[in-house]
Length: 134
Image 1 (cartoon, rainbow, N blue to C red):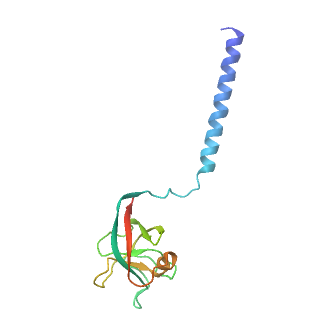
Image 2: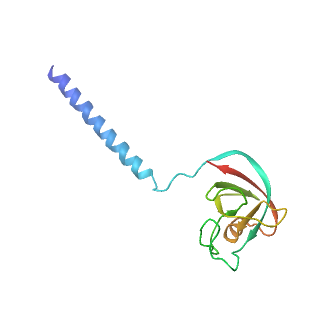
Image 3: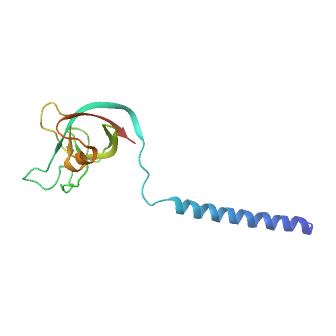
């Protein structure tokens, strides 16, 4: 090998190493440590929903969550605990999850915790749109 070829090889290796270190640093820096927000799946479904508060007899939801005024989730009679869904109401789309069983009121498909209802401006029984999250 000629000295010129050796120098080129060394320079190429050095540049490759610098690019690799920079790419790793950038990837680590851009990661926030939080899992990515799941994308939506499928069409929107239309349902009736209303806000609800904790029952006086229990301070935990059927899914085991502490029922506080800031809890943001939904209750549904058949969707499993932890299923993530997007709720759309009057232009507010939020990612939430099933945290309780219910509703027990005829004509409603979802109960929305007071914390989530306040966030999206849901008062009384209203029509919402929802869809599954990945």
